[in-house]
Image (tube, rainbow, N blue to C red; front, top):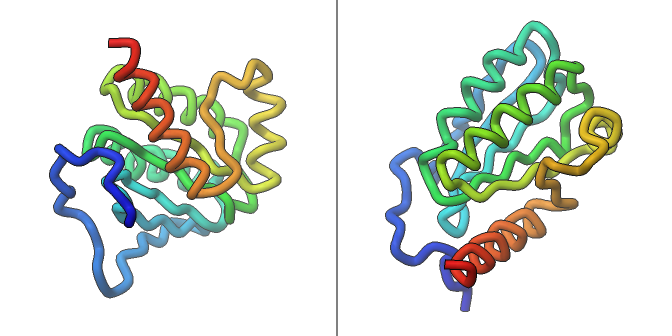
Length: 146
């Protein structure tokens, strides 16, 4: 039996049960769904100067929707250099909101993070499942500390 990570939190209204809710944006496709009361934002394609602002806007709107956010960039083929700044901004917003989160990166994204985030300050995971587990661990650590 799978138990929810956040049993006292209502499931958000944007959860998709059927149909294609993918947003196409100049070479990047973005889709959000809810799993275990964590928002999963899946992005594929290229995130470049033509769509980085739209990527930020799309992802940012989910920061406060659920207690957790997994940003799945595992199928992103290109992330412009400004992407590191955007991910750092999202990190600060998640911290401020109390939202636990994790980034799942493609090999290209992981290389860029290695260069742009050498101190490994951004929360990364190797898969969506590991991201969900990391969020659960962050939440448990927070509860134990309080």
